Image (spheres, rainbow, N blue to C red):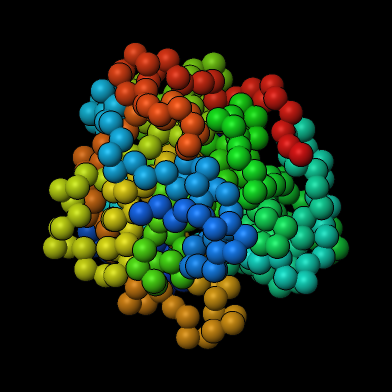
Length: 381
């Protein structure tokens, strides 16, 4: 859900993650296949060999962003149980499912595209590759109006990430909201600006929190994951733009949250160690995901139905027709995991590498929460 929306599912703002749990047997097509019921530090930036992560191996984000901060030893928030108890179920089905709908494009032989200006957007040319896909594996111009239609583009040589919300192509014209992230920049606690939107409700980038195909195939996910829950379980008072429901590392939220004690945008959950050896974890991808959920956790980024989001295999199939998620990870591999298998950790006192410590006592955790809306700081660049 785009962060300016008041409610998930508004007529023109329907996220694939907010959709019903329709079933599909192919995880590479974005379906959920419902059933019956050690940090990668860049110690040698600039000379590091490419790895299988979604972000470039020499990105400063590897050591200076929350996505890569290990939290396996972080203190649990004093009122973690209250927030977890308020999360009654995952989505409408209650299953901890994985959506496979996001494509990460590389800006190869791109055409610079200018999108319409927006007061909170980054009004910069976007290097759109000649061929690519929008969220849901749609070709350019085919994503239906009313869906989120995220387009994600990495410009690795320029160390930039472009994330477009509601990307639509009509002939030679494009529309959509652009959030540009600089991968060689250490962002402050307020990201692109406290209260300023991005292509995700929490004001965070999307790509760093996806379950990447190559990294999962390799067997190690060395970053936190982006997760989604229903709006009625997100901290907030529906329609109240002054109800504080944003926790660092998030910098934005929405007024769709409707739970007095729920998890705030940016709230970070850690999978309990007691789950790591569960015999139901059988696929190699599931093993990589649960290890990441324990060591790096997952960060609440948006409202919707399907908790986790993996990279579509569509881009990879273009260069290697044999590319598939089959045998690696499927949408239903972890459906048995419950909210009670997680705990909410405290809020870091500074960005990675800054002052140590955590706001974990209930009073100080709650005191760190910010209003969901209100872009008072000019966004970059």
